[in-house]
Amino acid sequence: MTEPTPLLHVVLFEPEKAGNVGNVARTCAVLGADLHLIRPFGFRLHDREFRRAVMDYLEGVTLTEHASWSAFAATLPTGARVWAFSTHATDLHTRAGFQRGDYLLFGPESRGLPVWLRDALPKLKLPQPGGGRSLNLAVAAGIAAFEAGRQIEGW
Image (cartoon, rainbow, N blue to C red; front, top):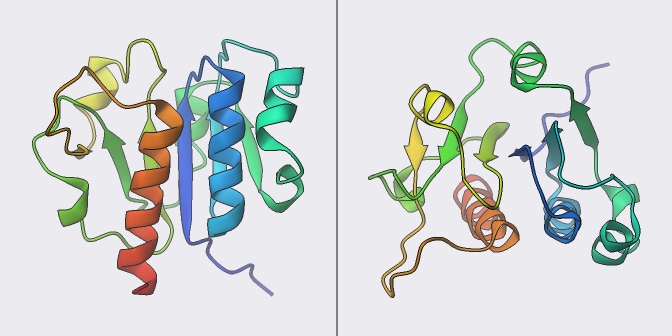
């Protein structure tokens, strides 16, 4: 018997802040999304700040750690759709046409996705009509994941 495809996969490339990862894990838990973390991390997984942010939601999340981008990429099924979120994108996330099982990729808090990775994937952005450099990682992942869920499930 095959396992059902998760609603989404949220992927954090080299995350730096335990609190952000904990909050993204909570978002994944309530959405039924899988969480992928690509090393290196800027913190120790399960440290105090992570535990405080994730609370008791971690048991409801399928969390997979990957040693590197190439290790993660090797796990992608044929035809997987990976969407890179970046302030450098021109297409809005609301127009993506998300599908069940899509991967939503976010870069590290201090620098975003590296150019080599950003340029290899379709890119989406979140609108920032008030300006600013970027949204907080956990906030951006939550906005994107809930919009993807809305498109997929029709909430």
